[in-house]
Length: 111
Image (cartoon, rainbow, N blue to C red):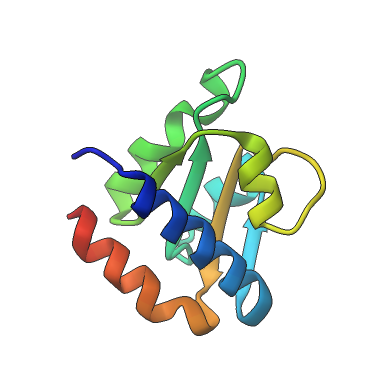
């Protein structure tokens, strides 16, 4: 399934809302742990992560655990959505807060 710009914008919006009203984990290790513990509701990984091996396991693990995983274009955009001033390779939303409906919508679209 092709991930459209619209879907990616919704992913960033979800992360921003969850950051403000719920809880997000930033970074590959934190995102991986959140998926393994099955606390992650939505995971976003950046395509421009180098080397790509750093994030390669995340989409597979997310699929295995039934967690929504979306690939976004840049680490900068992802970091900024997560509220940090540096790029971020992966972000996991663990408490949706007010983004619950938005994340449910995304899940429906991407299944």
